[in-house]
Length: 325
Image (cartoon, rainbow, N blue to C red; front, side, top):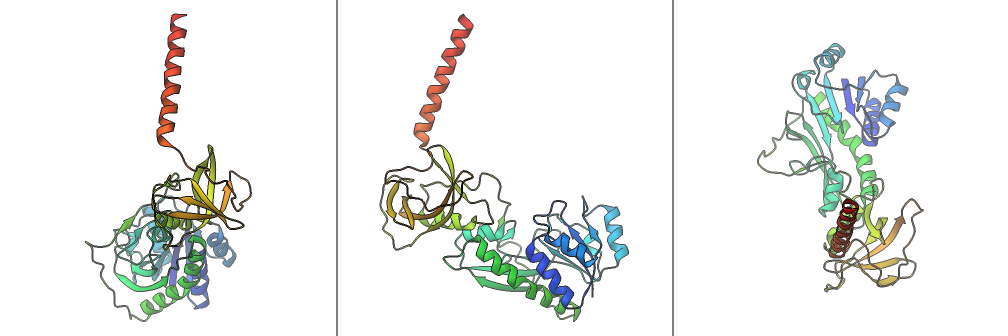
């Protein structure tokens, strides 16, 4: 089958290689303008495929290029532009997308991170036809992978990358054999998630231990890591542990309340405690924290407001004195 491949990332690369092994003719690869990693671009160039990086995938001149390639089926995998008509109609067998979410839930961006943040026990792998909505087209295939309590972003991503090529190959096989039984999505149900931005990684120690644990593991490597402050310095928290059986009680959120030699420190949260196992201070190497009991993480907002107020009063007095001089 003549395939035009739109994509980005390691899972797109491994799925492309699987399609080549299946004997399909890849007539071109369309990558993001700024790929998240170079693997797909390098693989396409090494294989001698035509490579395209359109600024506007829906521009008439690019749609004409696609039509000239005469694809039978178009595939999308983590491509970052919204596809409109007529490019959606540029292949007779359609335009399909592969999505790491259990549609109709987890439409949108960064859904692997969001699934961990929400404490999900499984994550979906879905192939679906693309329409002009966002992840709203008819479902072709859907599989699930379990999310373990100890999973973080890195190892869950590895399992997804390993699992997707089989789903991709099977989906293309179904379409080639005219064996698809598409399942319409319930358009009034489901959930949508937006892209995570800089600043989303900061921790609020008054939140619950479960929420904090889920957030820390959700943005561990290769994510940016969860952030807090220690005496005004940025600390990245890469690994933590939490057991729901740990006692709940009221104390000062963000304060170190215990230590496990060689394993980290216990920090008080809004309801229980959390064991911080691997942290990084600034650009130094990651390490196991051994902060003294009573050390406080984060920001005391009341104290910070009073400090800003005092600085503002001092600044006003200085300006008055300069004016009267």
